[in-house]
Image 1 (cartoon, helix red, strand yellow):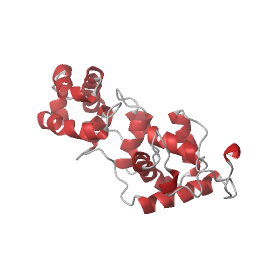
Image 2 (cartoon, helix red, strand yellow; image 1 turned 180 degrees about the horizontal axis):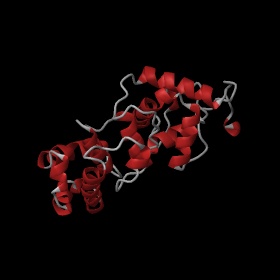
Image 3 (cartoon, helix red, strand yellow; image 1 turned 180 degrees about the vertical axis):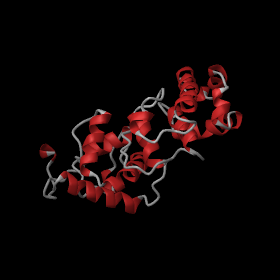
Image 4 (cartoon, one colour; image 1 turned 60 degrees about the vertical axis):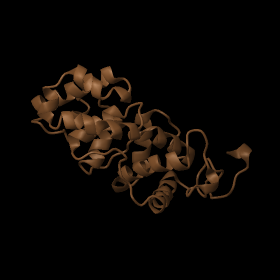
Length: 221
């Protein structure tokens, strides 16, 4: 079984298990998704979703954020952790969007990476969810499960992204990554892989399946 074949099986299995592949962050527009993703670094999406209503009520527009201060933004996002750094990034990214990008969130990887606090993971999420472009969001769930499946031997996010782009159908990659998050929370957790209830156990290397589909002994894994 090739990596592309294994990836195709994974795509279909996760589609059946999690038909609704959506971002777990609540957002009504591209700017608010960008800010929510920045807040989610080393913080749960659930916590971010509790914080953003108050933040966006105080700063309902790009211009409102641009006229704000790091201190005021920081107070509103304190419970998300690292609020000093995140408030600085949010203020600077909003001003850059206003001054350099005509008030619109950029739609290319190159331009998104120019924004303070934006790395490839964030940029891929914006490109996939907002602009409908092929994207691979290599968060911790994606990296862990892709490795267990045998789709990558890397752990560095950019290398995992490259490996997955090579085996996933481009039109499926963004939703695939959303489904990995759901699967990583429910079944293939960081602490333990519950292979007995996994929809991908029949072809997953972690579950002990060889390249020809045969069951392996623990020594051959």
